[in-house]
Length: 265
Image (cartoon, rainbow, N blue to C red):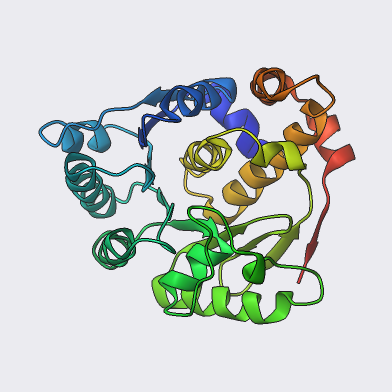
C-alpha cells in the first residue's frame, strides 16, 4: 500500500492524452487517488507538458490526426526522459490504422505498460483477433481453463518490448515476462458504462508515476475491480459511475486487503 499512500502525499502530475468520450472521468479518477491530471493534447505543447509530468497515459480511442501526432511526440519525450508511460490499445483489433499506429508507438516510444483486452493484445502480437468493435471477441475471452496459451503470448510480448503487459477481462492478466498475476476482482457493471477501461489506464499512469511499474499496475487494476464490486448495488448505470469514483476516493487499505482476489501463475 506504500504506492497508494505515496501518490496521495506527493500528488504527481499525470499527463493523459485520451479521447473526449472519457476525458472527464479519467481526470476525476486521477484526482480521486490523489494525483493531479493534465489532459493536454495540442501537438505544439505536449512535449513541454510531458517533460514536467511524472507519467504519461495515451489512449487510442476515438483517435484523430492531431491526437495521434501528439501521442507520438509525448511518447518519445517520455522515453527520452525516463518518464513512465502506458498505452491503451483501444480498437487495434478492428482497425488497421490503430494497429499500425500502436506498433509504431511501441517500437519508437518503448512504453512501460501495454494494456488492452485479449483481442487487442492478440492483434499486436500478430495473431488472429476476434474483436467485436472495441470489445473482446467471444473466442478470445480468457478463462481458467484456457489461460496458459494467453499467458505465454503475453510473456513473450513483455520480454520482447520490456513492458508490463495487461490484458483486461473477467480475469485480468498482468505480466512482466517473469511474474504473472491473475486478478478476478470486478463486476459486470464495469462493462456497462463507457470509459472504465480508459479510467483504468489513467489509474495505471498514476500508480506507475514513481517507477514501480509492475506493482503499480497490479494495484491500479485490482483497485478498479474492487471498487466496481463495491459500487454495483445501485439502481442503474448512472449511479454506478458516481459510486465508482466515490469508492476509488474513499477505499481503505483494510478493504483492499479484505477484497483482493488474485493468484500468481
